Length: 188
Image 1: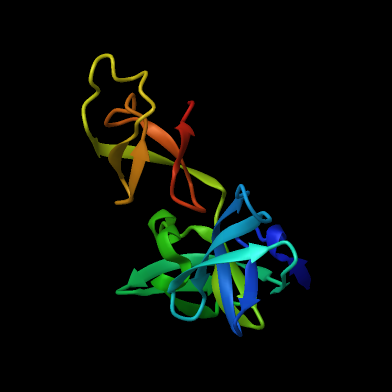
Image 2: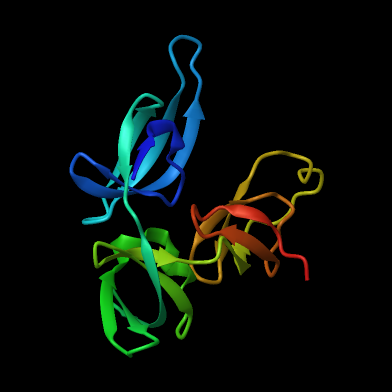
């Protein structure tokens, strides 16, 4: 399916320069001079390399159709992740660089949607947000909680994210699985 360059959204898989790419981040830029464009961070589905590209609304790109099938995450071995089809119990292995930082959110036995393009696995689909516990961060400094600056924190799954100053060790937060960013404090 053909789409305009300004219609590319995070998670879309497009064909660009003869290669399949996943849009990781998108930002609409409206410069003072010239027309607006979509600044897109792309991840190569073959080798995991990244590319930043500008797409104008007049450009047309091929959006690839994705089919999904439920698989269960079994285990990771080195840089290989093993999933099992829950219908016929077939196992499939994919490399970590194919899914990027989403590997931090996988847990043994977790069911995920395996994304398939042209009968080839290209990634996994997780919930938009997950709850994670902060295990290490800087202490709260009195009076600094009103500041708009963020501080680094390490989560229980090993992921490092930037959090607001008021977040302490032991607090559960919501993290976006698309770009691994803090989205809010978890309300029990």
